[in-house]
Length: 454
Image 1 (cartoon, rainbow, N blue to C red):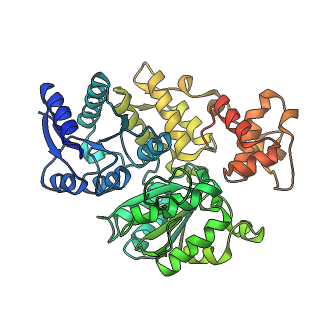
Image 2: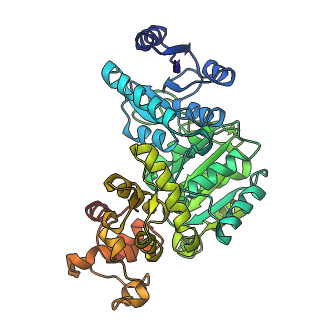
Image 3: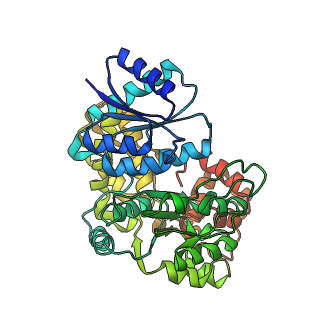
């Protein structure tokens, strides 16, 4: 009988949900605080956790990160009365299976529970995917060096910068460093600096006090406070507003933060790992990134090569994603035919491991036989011609000072130009949009139209 843990500080709701699940023939235990729930997780094995987002001693994201340390394979469903899409996205990114808004719908809840338990039962424990399954342990010299660097720096408290194109697995590397560190039993918090506006960045990182601004109805923790004792992962650090970089530098140097609207400092003990897909040295020369902050973060650097530079790993990665796609889609594809393998090896993979993962999942869904053939691979992958052989090789080298008018390019070549531009600027979408003379919204629309995962 599946064993479910329900964590909610509302006794009436907790009792109602537990009773509902018990009627569905599930074994249920209740906890009314985060600490009580974590204690039960350490003492018992659960097949699923349903937890409220707003708990008296921890918020849902902080609790989620701790659950993933104690029991990485246990699926987690977050519940809240606050329908916040941004929080939902962050929760899913941190490993939550799903996000339920109260008042919950019994049929929807039951379906989610059944799907969660089905996925857990179907997966093989020794091959459980990580919280970010986009990164794979490769066998190439480049991959071996990354693993060596992780093992070297993880036990220390050094700040780390992880460089690499979009889709290469920077967050996985950061999470692996955390899980192999002395902080592994403390929270791992991740935040995408590219999504933060100048107005929101300060409160998101450092929190705010009640009355600090219109709408601040209660004190709110920032990510530094949420990650206290653990690790804070700052993705796309190059996009952090310049004004906030000053506050971040102070937090790193003095290990103190000040909430928006507060007059007192708070001590924090957080290890920061930053990631970027752009050239920070260039950003420094343009006055867009503080040099002192860069050197404070750059105590150790790990560069993740793009997939095209790890050609010997492509088929290894493809087979890994095939395994997981089989599990997810309940299929039993055994491999690739020779032609399909050649196509996979020939393609440049501008979207790196994330693109490869999506291509393999699509191929598994479409395949009706036992092996994947070129018939189920995307046309842009099958028909790809290496740039060195292409007549328009000049598109491949797109200096920053060249502004190519996207509107003058025919639709047939538009997708390739977008891909080449993104590759040239290391998938910095703001820079790509400027070079293409379009705004970011138009670029995102184009990415969606052409199914470009960037």
